[in-house]
Amino acid sequence: MNNKKIFVVGSLNMDLVVSAERMPKSGETIQGSAIRYVPGGKGANQALCCARLGSNTTLIGHVGDDLFGKQLVSYLNENGVDTRHVGVRAEAASGIAAITHTKEDNSIIVVAGANGLLSADDVQVLENLLEEGDVVLFQLEVPLATVREAMRISRSKGAVTLLNPAPYRELDEGILKAADYLTPNETELEQLVGQPVGEDSELQEALVRWESLHAVRLIVTRGARGCAYVADGQLKTVAPLKVEAVDTVGAGDAFNGGLAHGLCKGWDLDAAVAFAVRVSSLAVTRFGAQEGMPTLDEVEATMRADGK
Ligand code: RIB
Image (spheres, rainbow, N blue to C red):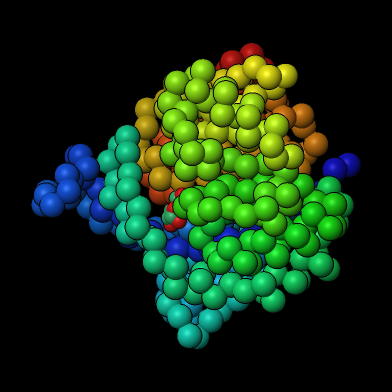
């Protein structure tokens, strides 16, 4: 039996989500229809996704000593995430994300708060927790030095490392050489490779070139176009399920959670990516970054419906 675990090193935020018919233009004021406070943060979203799919999942992060922090941790606990390594920091408020939401789109401003206090010392616990073949998921809403150190430890313990470079920050060699998989969206990929990737031919050229320079696999999420990666020098694309989108916040996190779940189960990359696209497709059909994450049963139902 596969008893590998998933560890997530990352952020927890309270999402303040204002819904509107459309996104405002720069300098414009428009009417919104609702404001909701829901649990989010890329690290917490990805951890909850993995746990809902049935993976044994631990989150390492920080919240403030406040009501939002308590709510964030308690929702993760209710959903099966091990939060024993989520620290409570009195010096800072819990992380916040101000989100403008329409059915098809979103824009997000994050204020790090306690996430910004997660230090290289805090991730030393991975030395004792990790076993060979475990999967560790990272994003960039906690300090880069912390990510670098956690990735170094993960690599030294023989874990599989998956970095979702969001929000984008320049990545140094220390991080790149410890990453097995990078999962940027198209905007983040353009920042990473320094060239446009909108066309399939541009994307293929960028991925082939990048992978020849760095020992890391790139899997690119493309919103309504699904995802793409290169195998044997050729671009492979995976289309999303045909669904009605309600909320795309956390769609990338669902993809990363699904991918980590598949890799943790020991599936090959094609199977893990195909599964991740299903998870992400389902996640946009419900409101809320974490509330939208599907269960394993829901994902498997879509596979049965497609004869897989
Ligand atoms: O990826 C979506 C997440 O980004 C939101 O939940 C928000 O908290 C920001 O971290």
